[in-house]
Image 1 (cartoon, rainbow, N blue to C red):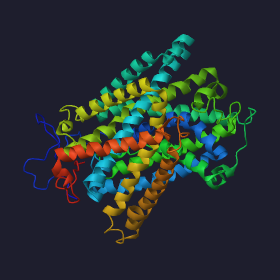
Image 2: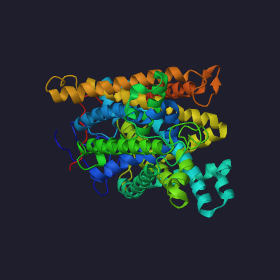
Image 3: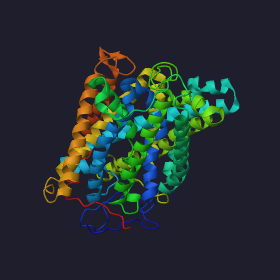
Amino acid sequence: MTQVDVRPQAGDTVTGVSVPGDTQGVRKKGLGGNSVGLFGNAIIGISTVAPVYCLTSTLGSTAGEVGLQMPAVFLAGFLPMLLVAFAYRELNKAMPDCGTSFTWTVKAFGPKIGWMCGWGLVIATIIVLSNLAGVATSYFWLLAGEITGSDSIGALDDNKAVHILTCLALIAAATAISYRGMTATKGVQYTLVVLQLVVLAVFVALALSKAGSFETSVDFSWSWMNPFAVQSFAAFTAGLSLSIFMYWGWDTCMASNEETVGSDKTPGRAALIAMVVLVGSYLATGIAAQMAVGSGTEGLGLANPETSDNVFAALAGPVMGPALGILLFVAVLASAAASLQTTFIPVARTVLAMSTYEALPKSFTEVHPVFKTPGRATVVAGVATGAFYTVMTLVSEHVLVDTIYALGLMICFYYGITAFACVWYFRADLFRSARDLVFKGVLPALGGLMLTAVFGKTLYDMWDPAYGSGSAVLGVGSVFVIAVGLLVLGAVIMLVMQRRSPAFFRGEVLTKETPSLIVAD
């Protein structure tokens, strides 16, 4: 593909509009090209996933669902993510565009399916941002209480007003860092990600050294790697849904493609590196934790309902001791804060792409002339996150919990559509070579089918009021109402935009033939 350098020059008005005189229809977005390399992009992908945060919040829940088969479920959740990652890699090679799933599915399936796919990504990210901010806030006050030795300071998190104000301050700080561009983001992430992985490695080493020291300890067995040993299919799918959530966020590597050196190849490689690091970290931590304390429901067991929602808080002292245990609190705070900051990347750039291609209001095409970031989209995402979290917290903690449970449906929704988009877009290429058949067809199709199955099963389970917080609306589970309601809201907004931007929805703006922007290396 021809390399087209359309980077803005000093003094340019930087907006996502067609390049003057460009008969090929390439649309510039004004992002800062060549801002991050392979290693930096992989770091951003790992940071967005937030491995320490994911582990402390899901180790116990997963153990409660599948028992000692937790490592097997971690591997099972990794499989569809890996297959979908191949789809992202192939699509990014052909069409490097910061709109990722939105842009690719529009080209494959048309404006309406593409718009809804983009909406799924945006709303999922807003939900995650609000949750990350809440977790970071809780650990901020928990850590402050540990450092000062004051229970009253640690208890400030229980004060709703203090909690909300602290949460809004963290969201504002994360928004400001993301607003300043990929270079600022990358610098902060190096420190926070390395801190997470180092503390996690220390925890794994100490947990292995203490295997057999506690009443609930169990000996390692290779049967832990057998997913067919899970007691029921329902338990397996529940654990798989949690596992898929633990890998979500690696596609941030793709969302920063227009700002990455080698925009067509580097993001795909970075995503695969990030996923290998994640699955290795999850397996090592899961196995070490089970050997040390087991997966039972008593004492230090991972599935103990009193501690399963925050495993590291319960295991920090017993496994690492008082001195080193506090590092786990620091690591969880760093993990949530780091992910809070980088998670702005995909939502802001997806909104930028959607507005550039006239699927959202033109005002979102504004890019900061110095920082080369989608400034307005980033700020609006920050405001939306703060407003969403505040309203949900004030309305009901049950609603907030159920909103988080609805996240898994959104992830399967837009990942699955993107996987199928890869197969359909490259359908004419599939039999040109064995490689094309495998990486553009078979593997993405399998990933899409797996996620579709999880989507359907989760949607069915959500109907039951017992799913999530246990609350219901007219006898229907509130998680189902929230998840389907958010998708319906997206459809309504799409219909409004169809009246405002008829050219996009007629397929006149973004088509399969529309060339993609490739920033020169």
